[in-house]
Amino acid sequence: MKKILKIDQLTFAYDNYKVFDNFNMELDEGTFTTLVGPNSSGKSTLVSLIMNKYTYTGTIEINNKNIKNIDMLKNNIVGVLNQDMISDFNHFTVLEWINYYIKDNDLDSIIKQFKIKHLLNQKIANLSDGERQIISLIGMYLKKPLLLICDDAFRLIDLVQKKQIFSILKKLAKDGITILNITSDIEESLYGNDVMLFNHSSIILALPVDKAFEIEKPYLENNLSLPFIAELSLKLKYYGLVNKIYLSNKKLVDYLWK
Amino acid sequence: MEVVFNQVDFKYNDNLVLDHFTWRVPDGQISAIIGVNGSGKSTLMSLINQLLEPTKGQVIISDFDKYNLHQLVGLVSINSQFRFQTVYEEFEYYLELINYTTGKRHQHIQQALVMLGLDNIQLDRNINTLSNSEKILLKLALVLSINPKILIIDSVLDYLDSYHKKQLIKIIKKLKRRYQKTIIIISNDIDTMHKVIDYVYILSKGQIVLEGNKYEVFSKVQELKKYKLKVPQIIALENIVYENKKIKLGYRDDINDLLKDIYRNIE
Image (cartoon, rainbow over all chains, first blue to last red; front, top):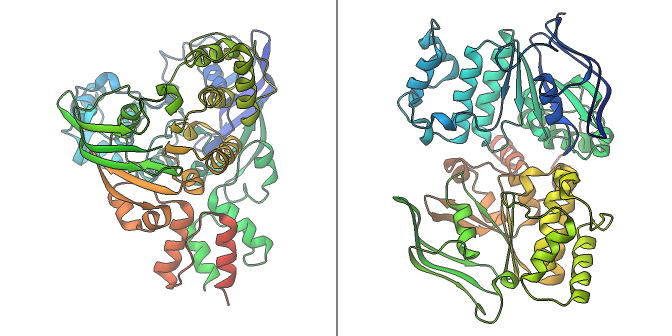
C-alpha cells in the first residue's frame, strides 16, 4: 500500500533536551489512525516537525516526497486542525465563509456531506464548539490535503458532536484523505481504524482498533488507561464472562444477556 | 464556610449570563458545575473569587470580614498564568499575600509540594522546564500553600492524562476527608468528575436546571441529553442494560462495583 507519511530516523532536540532520537513512523494512504500519548509525550512537537517549523535530522516524506525544503504553510499537502481556528471569521455567516473558500466546488454536495444545512445562515460566532470544528473541517477538506492531522482538536466538544465529526472523518478517509488524530483522550481512539500508542517520542504499539486493547499494561505504563468499554470487557474476560474485547456498549450488553 | 448566591444577575455587554441565580454551595462537600460552554460556569467562579461583581443580588461568603480573601477562596484555573521564573518566586508571591514569617512560609511550601507529589522539584527550578502536568499540579500547590477554605478547580482535569487524573482525584478526596474543604470542580470530563464529586449542578442559560447528589442527577439520562451533556460511561452502560434487558443494575461510580453488579445479574 502507498505510504502517505514516512518518517525515518528523525532526531530533534530543543536546546539540550532531546525530544526525538531516531524516530520512525509510517501511515498508509486512506487510513484513520489515532495517536494517543500522555502529557509531555512529544505529540505537539511531532506536528511542528511535520509542518517544518524546526530543523531536524532524518527524513520526513509525504507521498514519497521529502518535505524538508517545502513551505508547509503555503502548500496544502498537510492540513492541521487545531482547537479553534475560525474565530477570526466570527462575523461571517457559515454560507459566506464557505463561499469564500469554494471556487468550483459543489456547494450542495458539501452541505449534504457535512450535514450543515441548518447552520448556513448562522454567524460563526454563534456556533457551538463542535459546529465550529465541523466548519473548520470543511475548510480543510476544500484544500484537499493528502494528510489531515487533528491536533488535540476535540477536547471541548460534546459527545454527540464528537460522534458526528468522527463519522465525517471516517468518510474522508474512505475518500482517500489519510487522517491522523492526535489526542490524550483514549476514548477517541474507538472512532478510528488504527491505534498508535506514543510516548517519549517513540511508537510503543500500533494495532487495528479491535486488537489494540487486549493488554492493559502498555497503557498504564505510559500514564494512560484503556477506553472504558475495553477496560470493562477486559475485566469481564478475566472473570470468564466474555471471551473478547468489545468496543461497543450495545454489543457487550447483548452478549452478556443473550 | 458558606457560600450563597442570592438572586444574582450578571450582565456581560447585553447578555444576561446569570439570571436570578440562587445557589447554596454545599459546605465541606465536593460539587460539580456542569454546563455546555458559555453557560456561565467560569463567571460563577469569578463571582465567588470577587474578580467580578454581580449586576444585581449578592454573593455571600460567611466570615468574609475575618479573613483575607486568599485564605477563603483558592482558584486553580487552566487560564491563570505564572508571574515569575522560578518555583520559589511564585510561592513567595502567594505567601506574601498573607504575611507569613519566613520559617512558616518554608513549611507551607514543603507541605503543599509533598501533598501533590512534587517534593522532588527543586525550588529554584525554572517553571518553563516543567511538564504540562507538573505546571498544573504546581498551580494547585500554590493555592494550597495558603490553605484556603474553599477550593475551586476550573477546567484543570481536562488537561491531564489518566495517571495524573487519578492522582488529582486522590488529592481532592483527601482535601475533603481530612481538611473538610468545600470544593467546586468545573470540567467537561464527566467521567473523572463522576468518580470524585458528591453533588452536581447543571447550569443552562444562567440558571440551575437540575441539581442533587450525583446519583440522582446522572441517572436522569434523557434530561442530560436534552442539555447536550455527556452521561458518565458507567451510567450510560447501566442505562443500555435497563433499556434493552430491563435489568436494573445499581448506580455506581466505580468500574469494579459495576463489574460485581453485572456478575450478580447474570445467570
